[in-house]
Structures are given as C-alpha cells and as structure tokens.
Length: 88
Image (tube, rainbow, N blue to C red; front, side, top):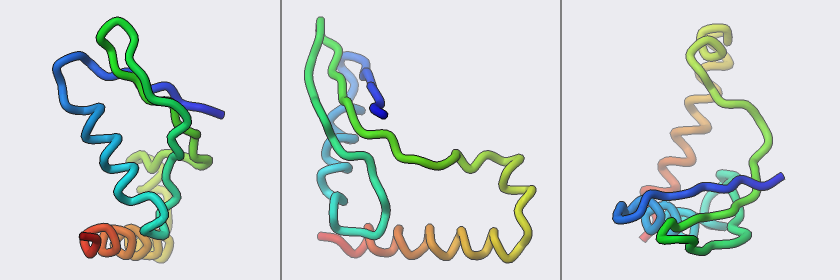
C-alpha cells in the first residue's frame, strides 16, 4: 500500500518531512515509510511513501492498555527518540 501526501504551496512541510525521512532512514530501529516518489503538480509538492502497517495510538486505545503495556510502549518510543537525538 502507498500513501500520497500533498503539501501546501509556500509552506516548508514538504522539505521538512523529506529531510526528516532521509535523515533517520536506516539510522534508528524505527520503521519509517520509504519514499517511492516525489514531485510537484500545479505548485503542490507531493510525496508518495509506503504505508506502515499497524494502528494509530489514539487516546481510547491508550487508555485501554494495561499499565505494563503502556510502559513497554513508552520505553520503545523513548529508545527510538534517544537514537534520533544522538544522530548528527
């Protein structure tokens, strides 16, 4: 499955996301979308990436987890963020 993200003209979201994906690719344990295509159509930048499997961690789902699973999730998130912050 693929994801199409369309970015507003004159905003820096496209460049920021592209730089972030390229920067952390293969440098952390996070599974991140792979870039399939980038382009511009009528002044709108777009990015096509692979879709990551899984579910969004919404509030209702979070509150439904037992404390042990919440702690495990937060430890994995903290570990990945620590990896990202250590990159130069």
